[in-house]
Each structure stands twice: as structure tokens, then as C-alpha cells.
Image 1: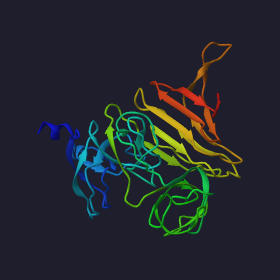
Image 2 (image 1 turned 90 degrees about the vertical axis):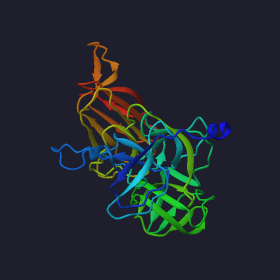
Image 3 (image 1 turned 180 degrees about the vertical axis):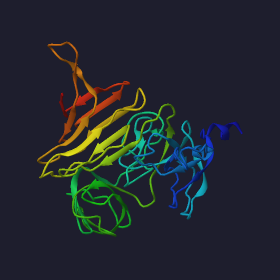
Image 4 (image 1 turned 60 degrees about the vertical axis):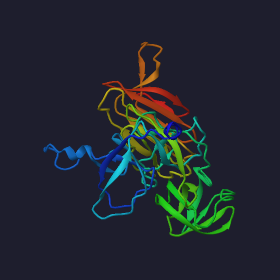
Length: 340
């Protein structure tokens, strides 16, 4: 009895109602629907109803599905493992190293609920308790390209086989999960449907869906993570809070891609931006409505204002925190800040 108890994971189980009609995979993350129903009506279902992560619920992480659930029209009751549990997470975007790799649940359209690259710690992030090879290939720098059903990325598909999954996160391709229908060579695979044409940010996983034993962090909300694609002379809006990965590989011929970081709504809210590849010709520019840099003005002795942050190359990073009246830049590496 003692030996069996010693091997049992610590699981915090809760029954909730999943309002979506799609299938759920074991270990897939879900978020509470905190604005469920009529806003003026007191409705306790807001604490029992969950949905797939998105840019509108990314600060309400609920937990992960305890098992596979088939699609069901009108939704269904499911069991989840809440933050604080040791359980399996549905993994992607990176391999796992025991007691080292941090995963954060994705709110992106392409792989909502799957755990990918690390964002902030807290609810919605997890630490791997197992070493697992998750990826069979990846092009997270935006170096791949799609033409009709053919995905091309030089020597990136060595380990990819027919039937494997290609997860497209952004670029010219429509985000989503595709199946490898055939493999031309180590640089070209043919997908089961056409994502679009142009630059592509992607990763490949086995068709068995990789699971990683992990500890689900508790505490403050991580805000989850997302991937956005810069838009040529147009807006590419980021979610409030959490980590936003900016897809590379795109060329902005006509003007900057833009976004506005609105004021925060709670002290301590964190927001991060990390560019994952080269952006050509113009930049992705985030306007900061009220912000301060982490450097002082040599004349006034006061912090420099931060009016915008521009990204155009891989690994450019900016992390900010809301202090009640302004965003404070905590770290900025490579990205170009401008003052008002």
C-alpha cells in the first residue's frame, strides 16, 4: 500500500462543463468562461464553465483535461486537473528535459490548449517532470514557406513521417493542425489541406500526440502565450497580459505592422513580447499608451518615457509590468524603444 501511494501523482480533480463542441485531448489546457451569460446576472456557472484558451480568457486558466473527450455538440461535463497537480500535459513547440523545461499553455489559434514555449510562471505554466522528445522538426524562426499544400524548409523534415502532425502557428499559412499526406524529401512535405502561400512558422509532432508528466504551477495567472503574425501596413493586435511571440519570416513591404498596448487593469500585470525571426523591410511596432523605460534621462534624472517598441529580428525581447499608472519596462533586449 505504501509503495503504491508513493507512486501516485498529486492530482487536484474538479468537474466542470466544457462549452465547446470540439474534441479535447488528455492534457489539453482550458480556461474559465468568467463572463458567461448575461453580465448583470449573478451566475455561478462562470466558475464551472470552461472553454479553449483564447486572447480573451488567457488570464483565467482552469487546468488540463484529465483524459480524451470526443467531440459533442452542445458541450459536455469533463474532469480537469487544477493548478498544483502533477499530471500529463499535451506538449508542443519544444522538447522536455526533466526538472528543467518550462512550458506555457497556448492561447494561439493554431494550437490552443497545447503547452509550448515558456512564458511567465504561474497558473497556465508547468515544469516538466520527464525528459521527452516532443518535436520531430520545427521552423519557429519563420524560415519555412507554404505553396498550396507543400511545406518547404531546408532539411527540416528528416524525422518527419507520413501521418505526423504539422502545427502551423503563423505566417502566411492559416494557423491550425495539419497531417503529413506525403513526404517528397527532407526539405519538402505535402499536407492534407492547403494552409495558404508564403512564409510559415511551424512545428511537427508525432500523430500519437506527445504527453509530458509535469507540475502545473499555481499562484498568479501567467497570462498564457500566443503567436501573432505581423501585418503589412496594418494592425496585429496582441492579447492583454501573458507572452506574445511574434512570427518572423514575413516581409512588410508597405509599412509597419502595428499594435497598441493599452493601459493595464491591475497592478503587477505583466506583458512580454519576443520576436522569433527576421521581419523584412519594416517593423512590428507596439505603441505604449503610458510607459517608462528602465533608463534615466541624463538631464532631468527622471525615467525616460517609452512611447513605442519596435521589433524586426530574432530574439528581440521586451517585458513590461503595469504599476497602476504606467507600464514599466523591466527588460528590453535588441528591440528599439522610442520616447514621446
